[in-house]
Amino acid sequence: MASIGWLRPSREATISVLVVDVGTSSVRAGVVRPDGSVEHVARRPTPPSVPFPGLVELDADAIADAALDAAGESLSAGGPVRAVGVAAQRASAVAWDATTGRALGPALGWQDLRTAGTCLELQGEGLRLSPNESATKYAWLLDHHDPARSPSTRLGTMDSWIAWHLSGGQLHVTDRTNAAVTGLLDERAEGWRADRLARLGVPEWCLPRLVDSSGTVGDAVALPGAPPIAGLAGDQQASLVGQGCTRPGLAKATFGTGAMLDVCVAERPSYRTRGERGCFPIVAWSRAGELTWGVEAIMLAAGSAVDWLVEDLGALGAPAESEAVAASAEDCGGAVFVPALLGFGTPQWDFGARGALLGVSRGVGRARLVRAVLEGVAHSGADLLEAVEVDAGVSPQSLRVDGGMSANSLFVQALADCCARPVEVCREREATVLGAGYLAGMAVGTWADEEEVADAWSPAAVVEPSGADPGRDRWRGALERAREWYPELTAVRF
Image (cartoon, rainbow, N blue to C red):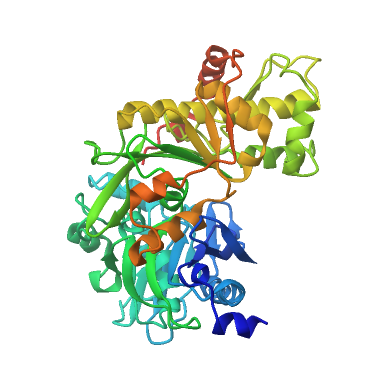
């Protein structure tokens, strides 16, 4: 029966898009249909390795193999397709040999902090880079695996790595959503910064060619039918597009291990690195040579706070239990939890802050503790939105959400209450596949343009604020008590 389907594909199949999505701990592939549904999802686990606290390594060869395997399975079940899109974790760095197509060593994950000392040294020279960007990771990979800078060596983020393998080694490309978080893209997003490359000892010929996020760049010859690769995007930008935020002022938040809140804006923000309230300018996507800009706010710990309840405290058997347990308590009993387990991101950017549980009495048991954790993440989400309103100069009328925590209705209600506006829940738990599908589909005519993508948005649910007082003033007081717990870390700025 499968072979008959390939011989007589439906029109829906032939204008669909295959997407490969490389996450932090898994690779998945899925087919995006013209109605915005995602079908035939195949997933392969690719967990990172943590050989030492602060070091995060990835098996790039295993990720490439998993991507091709998952893509083949999804395509076999749901193809043929008109195009291929790629979404990927941003800033993770891979070095490989162009003659063999194999990685020179473990890739460095975006969370890897081994180059933090280098970044601080560079600050003393007036060069501001973060260890979470790719730039110093590239230099480290070259210094340790190819100090001679061989002509066959290639460097790239995960989108480049996957595009290389999909194209059978014919394409070495990246889009500007990924390039902009390497720390090496120039201010106008037109090319690589020669001064930074020279200081780090990274030859420009090692780096990928810059292409549009939406546009055909070559064929995926490693897949049956060799469909064109037509979409590339970083995970958060793909989620932004996937949730239909393709008009200025539309915002989404992805609540996973951490949380990212992104908003589409009409023009590039005036600040180069970080705004007044701790947000970053980002390239949201590019199409036909035109860049659309966005603003991003970052929460360092969101779902990981729930993981803390499971793995460290044993208060829950699994994260999915948090909603039912928290719902068994009517309130937090005065307790406030600040989820600064890794410090504060936006707006404070205080790496010396630490998590705090305040207002505890004998009436605060398991259920109220779990509820306090969920509400603490919701308060942090509202802080991100308030920061974006200042740094982006927009006031979103609602907030769209995806990610694992979006399935928790108690959390979503708390978020709506803290943000004092409706929260729209995405139909896809992870909107990255859908967004990369839209970008690739616009390039080949499955969707006409960004306006059609915006019009296609249809949430699974809209949660209105309940009208209850979420206790924002008490929350702000708790934040102050959690700050500067380790002053020496608070003093570190990237």
